[in-house]
Image (cartoon, rainbow, N blue to C red):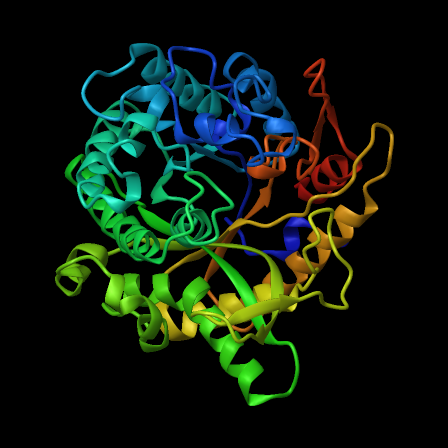
Length: 437
């Protein structure tokens, strides 16, 4: 790889990320049913109806996995807690085994010199709360705050940083408008409510963690570069609207106390009652912002119902998931977020990586090139004054890639899903060499 640790400022944190449902094995340790369990059990939702009951069996193998993170030379490890593991019904009774697991997990990170970077919620909503409307129900902000109090009451004294929700766009739009993720809905009213409530949930969870005395709290949003598919004004307008839905809706809500006018043209009539009064809650002061970035979309208009756009396959090289490789997008978002919203607040790249068709013994040069290109974009933003303080590889392990099942491999470590053997890839070893002091 072309980068090395000395290319970045002293104290710059290199991390790798995972999420609970994708690696732990949800069939262990008294975890409750989630809406991903029921989504995966519904024919047609997930490749080969694959699910997360075993996943990578991180629940039993976490020490081996954290050894891999340490031996790669990482400074930190980004993980998420499973709501249904800690509170199987989403409310009320606490599963002691779940709390004990995260207690051991955090201690094991600290023993290996890894800073624990915690995410409360990475998409695995308890099924009992989904039965009550899930993210469509305004009470979910209180439910999430209660969960934050329970789990961070146990581990919050030892985590380096914490964030309430990973990727609000996926929780709101992807899951309720496009139907690609649990709960698999395609309904604009449900979408408008979910997109707003994911932000009120964020705000109330921040309040709950502050009440515990926690510091270094942030938000993590995903970003996708929207480019017009051609030179027409209509294509430019379509790309702008997609940018509004994907990027500006959540950033405006968090930092400007408003939502974009172009998005509200379509979604405004379906917003929950009194939404305009919630921005003080949503805009809780933050200590940092995390950016997840992977790709761009080429957008063109169509003649259908709002939002009236489609996507065009672009000309750039693509990952195993068909996503275009566009490193300039990472530089764009780091600069744009800094200049438009955060004004000096520390920034972190909290996810970046690619799916590649990795076979045992195959050199994954494509992944190394992808990471090199995006790290170069991050360095360029740093040189231009963006206060970037860390970079996180997605993902430490090959894992359960949601509706794509187990065949899309994002990991720096190959996992054989039959034997669960871990084998570091060439990219893992290259990063370890680059991070040597």
